Length: 162
Image (cartoon, rainbow, N blue to C red; front, side):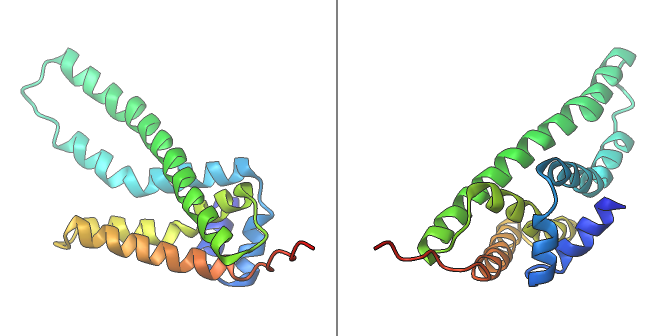
């Protein structure tokens, strides 16, 4: 149930109420949310890969291939999620500094994880259309930057040092 609550609030971003509800969630809940979201988004690819498995493979090759699909592929996805969200949070930190807002990297990391939901879903949907990957990436980053900008400007500015 917590996943669906996080998903619903992520879709509602950059609304203030949704943002503050998501910021109250712990980092463990955020990482679990990302893992479940990515599993759901990449499940069709995993199933398609298994269906298209070459029938000429030996049993050993087929077994190794399935281990790669079910063990190493999710590990790779988790690694890419953590690195990707961390890099995007770093970019959001630069944006925060330019806008002179009071936000820490930890807050931005969680905000980034949730703000990436709609752009990720849209990218996965565009992957199955004839839209070029470059255009899909441009849409992802444009939408993500817009959502993050709107979320960051909700926070108050830093107080001037005297």
